[in-house]
Image (tube, rainbow, N blue to C red):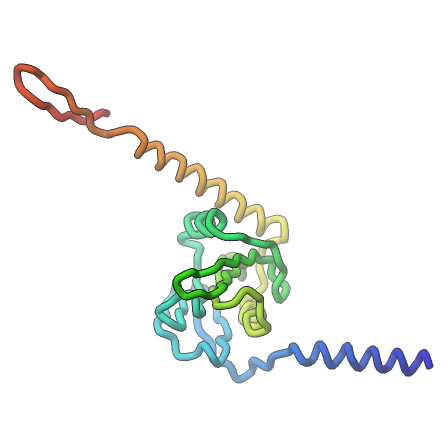
Length: 194
């Protein structure tokens, strides 16, 4: 009796794991940044594709892969300030999964931040769950060169830098760069504050 239960349990486990597997052998691929990503069939034939980004549709929320190293601080800081993020592990990659509701399109959207090699990327798609297809896209990239601690430390440092820069920038707008004075003899005069 015990053997039958064990065999049935093992069979169910194998079937459930096999049902979520995806065969990406025939998927096309796209180069983004320094990586080659497998592209699910439903997102082939992009609207735009170049070194920095693969956009399936002109609406970037549909499906986009973006190389973010040149703008890591600004982009990550913006996402962390605007949306709810959660630490996850996807196909062996440490990642941050952001979800948000687009009131114009009336859709739930996701953005997944991760690293491949020494570079940082994000994938944008419609939906609030990390699907098997998205996992396969992440899995197709190189393993991250960063440890768990290093990955999140880099993102935290970039967020701190983002806040520092925005704090300095906001102070520039709090104080006028020109002053106005009225001289009774010569009229209104305008000058710069240095």
